[in-house]
Image (cartoon, rainbow, N blue to C red; front, side, top):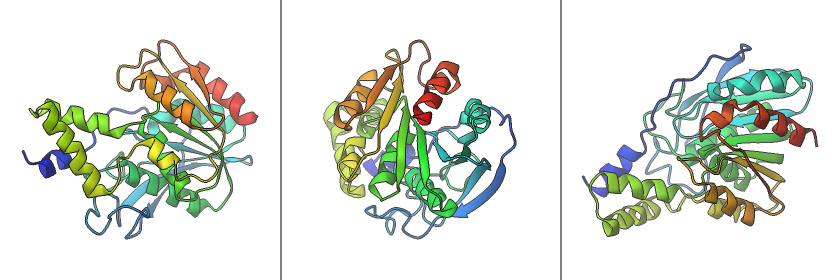
Length: 268
């Protein structure tokens, strides 16, 4: 395979089963623009970056502050099913979405910038100050990209966050028979084509005033190393890292203790 073919294959997200929402949301759609997120080559890679894609969005009304739930790679809004009842019972106005090529949204190829563009479009659509964004896995990078694009948020919570997308791309190349040096070349090709390394730290450097951040991560997470959360916490001013044992990478979304701690953080 060529580098171009390998990258395209890598940008097809997996699909995972997701639970039903315990409380039915109001469902609606938004259509992303021709340049969904500034700074990325949407004219060359419109599908990867979500240009003109119609995305599924979800709303649970509430009289309290607005929260937005940002899913990760291969995920969807329904992965936050366990959060909906506690958040709405606490009075929050809750929003979520399926990024392009995820859940009920259009598309075949996906990326962190496309996820971030959807998050940004949803926040701009609802037109209210956002009290908090809760981002899982790649949703942490999407959140940081949205912050870099000027989305105003009071605070952020990351669950099992990814810091370095390039590690996943290099492993993808190795799985498809590349040598170590060839896999490094694949990463360099991607970075040149998309004008970014898609590191959370690179996005963070463009955030003028990062909001308070709390991170939850399992040291035994086999999908994303705990060290990535430690790196984010070390570079994000004032960040608090909470170690959560025995929940793994995806089950952290179902951990009641994490939900309750997040509620305490949000309540200030």
